[in-house]
View: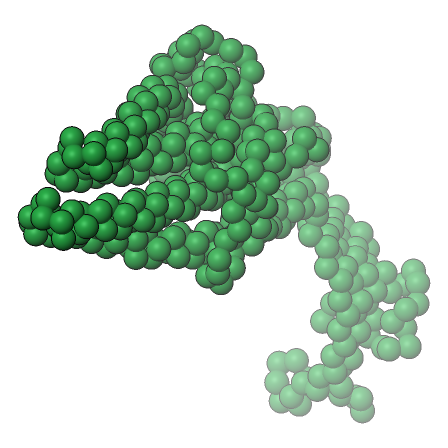
Length: 476
């Protein structure tokens, strides 16, 4: 039975002072500071340090092929892995909202009514005709924990860092997705080019086979020449169905990347009409701290671990709680809302110091410190890998530039050799073996040139990704 008829205050003055101090105090383990990273002045493989970087370019500007840009747009909108990452952002955002509410007091309101009849033979027996007891209450309670040691603030910082980390993680997924779509698209263009080259060489082999058969009929060559040319033609014909299979498989892979069922993919410019750029500004390694999403996510992981350590440390110290409760209480329903007679109120302050939980809390704090060390090591490792990937991409781009020049020259020379061997064969100044060797060498050179061009284009996309480009679609 509730019979509170006054306002009782049990708050020590020192508690109020500590509560006011909580508004301006720092967290227990201090402010976060980024660890010093000894980054080089420029990337290995770069010609000169340049403050500008292609990482800041939106992908719609970096890639000139409109069909490729359309595929990337479709992938950004429909890729399932990216959608999962975006859902993680929403989940972390809600967690951050919950943490922000940690400063607010806990408020609850309620009403209850009871009717009881004690036993006539019990210790609480009531004499008189009316042996029932009524009790009516309507009350509200308010509880607020003063954030003296910064525990709530640390949790808020941890939740915010976790939210921002998921956002950067989603951006990292997008940068990889953009590079993967570009690489798959360039591979598709390469297969188209190799298929076209093979079909043209098959037609050339058919022409040569007819010429050899005519010479065989005229008694100028043996049947061995016919057999060898037939075998050479069959080798080219055998490669065409495999190339066609690879084209379909690559189209299916691109469709899945864009979140669609396997289907054909529209192309833009042919492989050798795609623009190749070798002098792409990479910026300086320090820019990776701001441009590359996985590096930023790793640093936010350090922030999250630092905040968690602060919250764990604050849990070792006493918690200060203010509680207020008030409402209406009466023995009869008719007097329930009569004021001021039915009013009651209580204000209390409590200081709670964990005693038997100290061992567990100390162990949890040491665990958070270990997590902080691990997060810093992961950040340093991410930086090392990022600088290494950019350096590898720059070296590869320069090497492919030289290789493509040489491969193009070789392909041109061997194509001229095919034309010359054909004329010489028709005039009887070259053997059929020389024609077959020239044709096979030319075919191999053209297929290799197409593959090198594909690698050249893909290395541009890889450098763009390694620098952190691809998560921006426009300047706004």
